[in-house]
Image 1 (tube, helix red, strand yellow):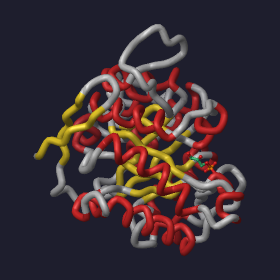
Image 2 (cartoon, rainbow, N blue to C red):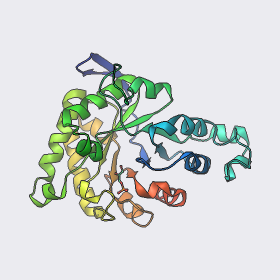
Image 3 (tube, rainbow, N blue to C red):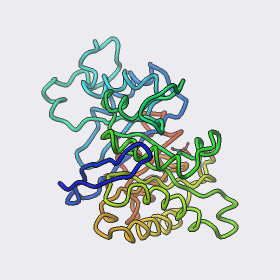
Image 4 (cartoon, rainbow, N blue to C red):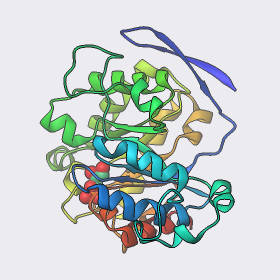
Amino acid sequence: MMQITIDSPDATISCPVNLAAPRARMVVANWKMFGNLALCRESLPRLSAAVMDSVELVVCPPAPYLGEVGRLAGRSGVHYGAGEVASESVHLEAEELESRSRVHYGAQDVAEVTHGARTGEWSADMLAELGCRYAIVGHSERRDRHRECNQTVAVKAAMCIAAGVIPIVCVGETMSDRESGQTEAVLAEQLTAILQLMKKNAMFVLAYEPVWAIGTGLAATPEMAQDVHAFLRQQLATFSPVWAESVTILYGGSVKADNAASLFAMPDIDGGLVGGASLNVDDLLTIYRAASI
Ligand SMILES: O=C(CO)COP(=O)(O)O
């Protein structure tokens, strides 16, 4: 395992990266500001029972539910009586659950500093302490509503890496960017900010989420998404060709049970970042299984 170095405004950070590892296939459920404790308790045991070694499954609930999701993901419902959790997993033996791959979980955002008087924010270290393996950074809803710029997103990603949390970095163009032929320029600018801070070889997940496809029911076609994913991988390769092959690139934007398989069949699409459809456990499981093909 080699070490890589990151220059952040706070510190110089070293983090391990395993270049020998093949890139992971993955489905990430971004619940956004939806769901409740009942959804956590209904879905986590079912997801844990369905998880396969070949595809990672990550749940990113609203922050107040991270502790409960972590608890459920860690023990897959064995702490609950059958009356409390309506799930097949409560019938599984503890050893069987232990031996399975676990559902991972992560936050939808993180602060760009390690600590401070920041009401309503949380640090990457706090997420690590809660057992979060991932944190989404740079989602277009935060870039738009919270005015997060490329530099802020890059610092957040670096904070995650320093804390041992893998950032899922979102990039994507608006419809007007696309219509004016600016898609590649916009994506390159978003990605360059990240790469300049992380240098190369850092462990992160990239998510291509065209803004016009989010929550609209209008997903990119598999070919359209593949073109962009190939472009993103090419950009990564300018830093390191070997590393570029190891980076998981997810597609997000109206991924549904009926279009997931065709999107995930494309060579540079390694899985999905799923919003609305992830709130329905059956749909999420169908999407998850589509990533194993
Ligand atoms: O923003 C998204 C995931 O982060 C995508 O949302 P939808 O799947 O609801 O379009």
